[in-house]
Image: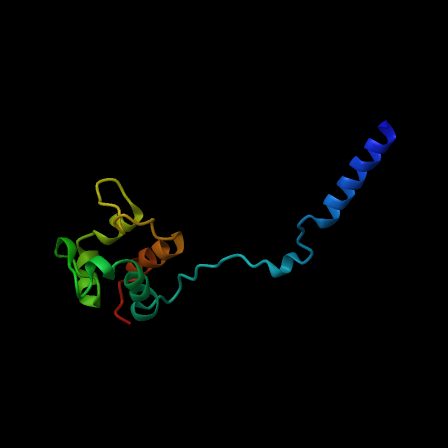
Length: 122
């Protein structure tokens, strides 16, 4: 009886190893790259804000009197050093977006880099 049990166990291990996941072509796995060069307000920043902020800070609603649906409005919030603090969830700032998960790191990095690059209206 014991040899049969060993044979069943070895068969199970063999089948399991043949059906398990593997990455035969690691070159197909590409790391996510967050491009922070030549950021554009219109192409890079506005879409992030539209997807995450306009619901509460857009043309239809201005929570806390803040609007983020135009370059001038965003620039004002940036000039008061508010935007990065709220999206990074820094201490002393209300975490935004409110009652939603924190923005992904690439989006935060894009906004921070755009600000560091001079908050260009492009």
